[in-house]
Image 1 (cartoon, rainbow, N blue to C red):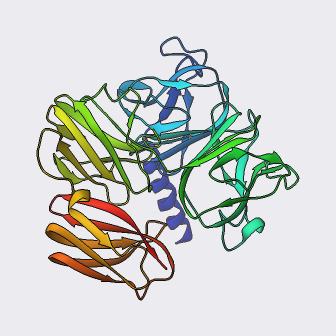
Image 2 (image 1 turned 45 degrees about the vertical axis):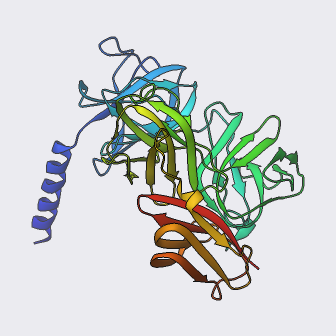
Length: 388
């Protein structure tokens, strides 16, 4: 019986293996372009036919693409490095010389090149990245393409202290108590990082660092194409992002975070809708628009600047603010709903309103800063409120 089960298991694995797709990486950044390869095509390994990897791959400055089954019928390319989201028949991926652990996801096209022996590792280390274990926990590693400038995207910090640290060495740390930007000193005092999501940049040579709200940009054929740089929106709270008087042509756009395809939003609705992760391109009608985008929900609205409608911010008023126990919210038109978020972007209250005036009870809130999202029709705004 055991032999029979073993034989069936082996047969199953052989069948799975026979149907697995081969994923390879080609280009002058690695081993040349087919058919003029400098040796065998470089293939990645997989255990699930979805995620493919290759460790310690030596890469030169140039371009690469991923392709399936040693054929150009199915291939992926992108325009960002060291990570991004490849698209079918996309552009060649630019590379920077180094040695990398490479990962590619066949189902969604995402790829990462993580430097190994070519560059020192730089991480952020301390209670701000692990509030439970603090300095007993490992670093959160940053990404680099040149071994000098390191970045960290998409990480939510707890309020607390931290260092920049090289190669996980406790005696090779940089710090400076100044936030959000400054010059860290080797073996200097710890940074204090307020809780929230920050886009972090650190220069290993100069010690310069910065913590900024994540950027949100818009790009696509309605602007300068999907391979051109993003047109960034601005924010003063890290939740709602805006841009005024942006001229668009007939075409399509998407929103994305930190100039990376790792986090992007799209939908089929225009001029207002809710973008979803890796959603479809947003169809756009030519015009000049003021655009608002909310990063926590993906809600967006394109308001034609020639229209006479008053913006949501002009309609809604909050008073008193700061407050000891409650806030009054008033508007010239009916308010549909109100949501309250903490500084980490977590939804903590939601209220259906359907009135021009609403009193928000804050007795259950601790003292501190919160964000109130006010929905009026297709418009929305987020305003900061303070509980004494």
